[in-house]
Length: 106
Image (cartoon, rainbow, N blue to C red; front, side):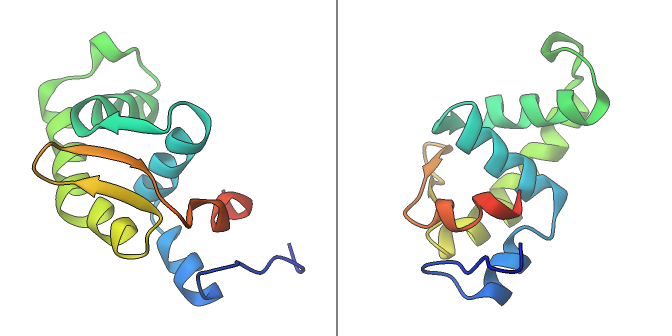
């Protein structure tokens, strides 16, 4: 890891972006599962993983808690750094130009 240097992001910005578990899990899902998600499905997947349960067992409160955090905190922060492209109106997120800079940190 000592040799890692992001191409586009500063090291401080990269570490800041992966400081929160919710952002790390979001990035893992975008990199490893699917490059495009709707926020509702993303929130359900993350809530299921947090509790180690199936999607059908995720309660509405946990799904909503994760969705609100994604919509109002984490996705805008990742979008500002061009790590994701986030459409607030459609509530969709796709990988962005600089997402590969964070892959080694995950």
